[in-house]
Length: 331
Length: 219
Image 1 (cartoon, chains in turn purple, green):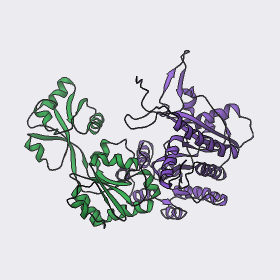
Image 2 (tube, rainbow over the protein chains, first blue to last red; image 1 turned 120 degrees about the vertical axis):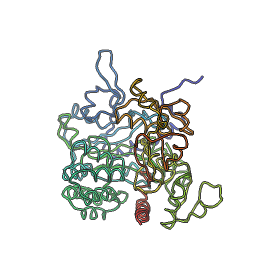
Image 3 (cartoon, each protein chain N blue to C red; image 1 turned 30 degrees about the vertical axis):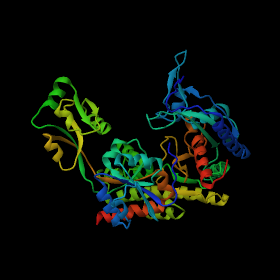
Image 4 (cartoon, one colour; image 1 turned 90 degrees about the horizontal axis):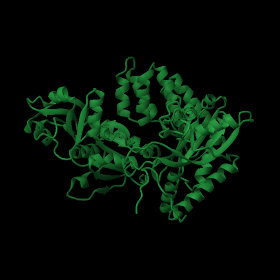
């Protein structure tokens, strides 16, 4: 007899579980060997506490009352719970703190799209280490994690979360208009972006062309020069930040698989400065992401810069099997 | 979740149907050989050295491109709006395939207005339920959207709906069915779209194709 489970959830049977387990162990071993201690936090937290981390809380899709009438929520990622944990448990610890996790998180799904309501993330958080060195360390750990998963062809996109916020402020685009432009950029709807900007007062053709061209700049170091030639103080600052991070990566010898990407935008509200995304040529979906969240800990009462990344464990597993079938290797 | 590969020649999703002719002309203009697609072959996939053409229904293009089964594709803005939750990068307005999404009712018939005034609700038949819902929501009106798959013109003629939301190129089909345009919702053209990962990992090829198409369409 078939008893259904909610869409976007799934059972894992032994064959898959064995593979997931060895991937899980390989990743945690990479994290631990670099000094990142594994932590666990409750899947359910007070809604108020999670909302402190991400003002929009749109991602906490599952809220409910407990027996005392308190409003609880299922976590939608691990970064906010770990910020909470650090503020409560490590308030007086000597930074930097290095923590890692493998945990399930929960998000709303759109029906019929094969999206997962519950999914596993493996990642690290480096707290108290500022840019650019802190960012570079996180990227170095990420690369080691990708190697451990045998994703030797994976690419890490490196962008800047403040670029467009500052650029639009410079152009005098604020409020709803700014949000409209940012959502076009996030969706990478270039046709809509051009129309949106052209209809705004005081925005000339040059500025429109700059925004569109910037969002298409991705590649090696040279794109920073191309970006600078488009001008503006916001671009200058963002390319300087990315440039410093890239130099720190080069110094560590881990810049080869990093693609600078000025079109990168992450949709989580707490990012500032460097942002990361992970791709593998074997699959058409993003494998994970991360970046700096220097302002997040402050919302929990600890003023520390921080950075981290999370990989979607199931997607990494899919990429792994695709890479194996490509090279003909057995796991 | 699709697990498609982004390797070998770039895969371009080509829409069959009304957009096919102009899509192939555009591809010819940027030096892609389309003679096999134009021929009598019943194949769906046409492999070339630099690019593989994959033909499909226009409404399937976002699905294949989002999953990365096709790296890039061409489809109508009407399709992209109806499937707005599909994550594809919209890189270029190709300008051809121009048509209008409209609200239409029976000629000389006031049922649309009557229903809205007396019943507080219009019944609208359409193949584009999400686009229609969004339009009426944005203009502050209540409707019952009825999704149909076939000839939507039939619906108001035999009383399934008060009006229709549909795509109109010349307006002849409306005219032949005694329908007339009441409101223009938006204008649609063909768009060049890309998979998110292909846009990052095959940047040079995607950019080159985008700029060639931009030049060809401007000329």
